[in-house]
Length: 120
Image 1 (tube, helix red, strand yellow):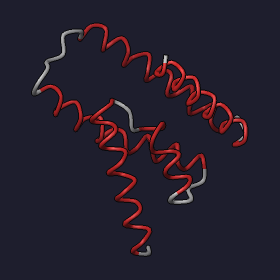
Image 2 (tube, rainbow, N blue to C red):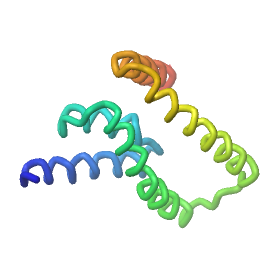
Image 3 (cartoon, rainbow, N blue to C red):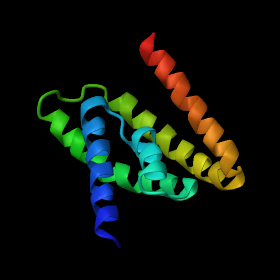
Image 4 (tube, rainbow, N blue to C red):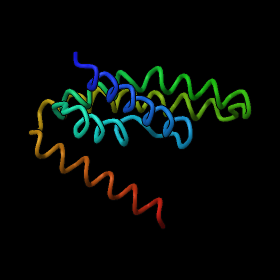
């Protein structure tokens, strides 16, 4: 692997980790566009890689935040986790069933909707 590619990969991880810890995002929203443009990943490989990366990233952020602010809604969080696990399995199935152009359009639409919601 070329040195430049390795440095770009570390930069992508640094950006994703910082936004994850700061804003609670960093998985698909940040990683996928960066991996597609900077590292030239295939879309499906970027999805898989973002899911792998988000596990340690999220855990690191959780431990960092819990030092300052303990979690009080454990029951709801567990229900969200259950739903998210089922949803992730459904999403993984759909990701391999839908074409890459359709996946990119869905991803772009989700990013636009999230951006509009945050702005408003």
